[in-house]
Amino acid sequence: MAEKGKTREFKWQRKHLLGLRDLTAEEITYLLDTAQGFEEISARAVKKAPPLRGKLVVNLFFEDSTRTRNSFALAANRLSADVVEFTKKDSSVSKGETLLDTARNLEAMGIDIVVIRHNAGGAPTLLSKYINACVVNAGDGFCEHPTQGLLDVFTIRKRKGSLKGLKIAIVGDISHSRVARSDMWAMTKLGAEVTFVGPPTLMPPKVEQLPVKVSYSLDDVIEKVDVINMLRIQFERLGGNPFPSVREYSHYFGLTVERMKRAKPDILVMHPGPINRGLEIESEVADGKNSVILQQVTNGVTVRMATLFLVNQAAAEKPAEIQNG
Amino acid sequence: MKVLLNAKQIDSALNKLTNRIVADIPEGVEIAVIGIRSRGEIVAQRLAGRLSKKIGSEIPCGTLDITLYRDDLNSPKSGSQPQVRTTEIRFDIDDKLIILVDDVLHTGRSTRAAMDALIDLGRPKAIRLAVLVDRAGREFPIQADYAGYKAVAKPGQLVQVLLKESDDKEQVIVK
Image (cartoon, rainbow over all chains, first blue to last red; front, side, top):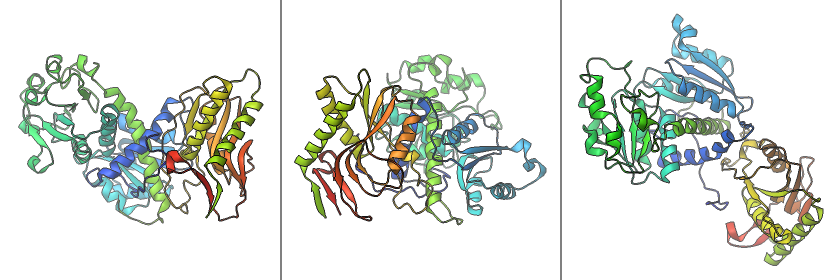
């Protein structure tokens, strides 16, 4: 009722969601506002609405994922789309087919939206240049994971009202984290101050060129922040010896009950999951009253519904031709 | 542009709607009012207020966003992009007599969408349609149960309800 029936003059024009770096604050806000309208669907008896009826969504996952893949599938299902799952191990990718050939074959089956996760940064952008279907990035290399960034700011906005002026720490393995990057773009565009926290060995090269502060000590920032996002230590991506031992990492960068005592009483504790309990976050904190980790999962479906809806809307209004963004 | 109703006439149209709705309520049936965004929401709130007063108990009132149920979402011809807003119905619609409210009844397509949206929320005892203005131009077999005013308008003309909550004035116009 806040807007009192007045319509805002804004049109969503992107038929692909490739990353948050290129989005304006207005576009992000519009997507979050749209997502609010989708929240109610998941809460009612008939958890389905018809806007993507007859549309085909393909989950094209070249990397393992359970949460994101299911979240996208659920979002598509709740909007009445049909979903085809296509994962690396049971596809002809393992027989040497290239990304573009795979995508063209899928397109020949009449897909409308491709949700793609790939270990190579830029793969979704490449795909978007060669096929007519909408492309949604579900994580590419160490570049972006835009819907995770969106669900994180959606969750924060819901709890704090706005991101303007909030101090947010993103803690852990920043260098291998596309979540940290998408979060950074979304959070800073919406007016928050972001600090990357972690050991120097887990900071990305040229971090000083990013719109963030950097700290190598969680103890220095814990008292000041309104939101803390604890990244998972991704052992599968870590090469070399970025920290001497898991215990030492936990000691310096883990979110423990002891550290939480020094935090603001209304701090939001976030984690993109899956959690390594006792490593980057103690169980009592992950399950505690400040944690919004499970709300993030719920909001993920909501934000992905809005994303699928909007890219399809943009595609419906444009003639079918290959275009970017 | 021609003014069809002024503030006073809108007020009496709302009174007429209120009286006729109340006269039709069967004994022992709970009613609720649900408005279609965006101007149907305002008409619904006013109606709910008047109905509550007349009946002597609080009539629940909610707002329905029908964007996801529209039949033109995938048609490239639709000019402005529809914006999804929130549906806010904080009561159970099961077994209630639902008074579905819109500002103008024209093609009937919004009403069709609204009925589909309502059915996904539960199983009301009945749905009745109340509109402030009923105009010609139906494309679906849908008629209003209660109309505050019947407007004469040619195809291509726009009948607009302006209300002080959203437009800072109180008029029904045709242009």
